[in-house]
Image (cartoon, rainbow, N blue to C red; front, top):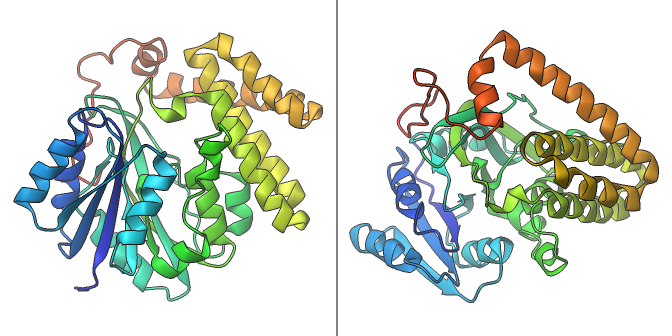
Length: 332
């Protein structure tokens, strides 16, 4: 087994409800040669106390404190202080399967040209109940064109990256927050890495990605604005990829509209207005794509587990007997 040090960076802001469980899943990794950095981003709850309790019990854990500056700045502070040549990030409300780092490190080291390894995830609620599984995309190798059109990784907790690739990508873009457009830092980071490096895949659901009504990714209009700014940056460097970037914007906006229709239809209009400001012709394409996606999802749920899906869509708990939990010791 490899003995390379892996640094794990956990940005945390008012995360007292979930941080303990997140840290348990990180400390329980089968790969033990870890440095675990909890970056408290100006929390006003018991986040620091929880992190310090873990640090007292496990010398691999270190707590860093800073004034509130956003998730990208917290991640950047963490990796800047980290000692390892391999780095992983996990949000303070997400969970890892116990083998996540071990398997990703093996995949990354098996390909000298790979700068980033990722895995699939399951979306979980506040009780760790599995809401859905991620699309099992098998995107490996040179993925630059693909990542411009779709966010196939899905979240920042699913990657392990080489330091040289992290430095090439200039870390995570804190300027999105300054522009009132937090949300797509993870995707922009993946695009920057893919400009130069290959991607490796561990084809298993090794991350429990927390989906809560009030989390950052629930603000659809801001998320679309974030994607638009990321697109503009990439287009400036790669004008030859304009068609792919436009397809990516259409795909992402369509996904946001579909998801928003399920939860809060009145919030769809601001999303369409944001898209219209960029390109009025996008709106028709987005609406058509959203309709087709909704019909496709509906057909799938009818065939599989419509009752549970329908109850979740309207905010009710899943029926008994249909619940599946994400367990850190079970790769699914």
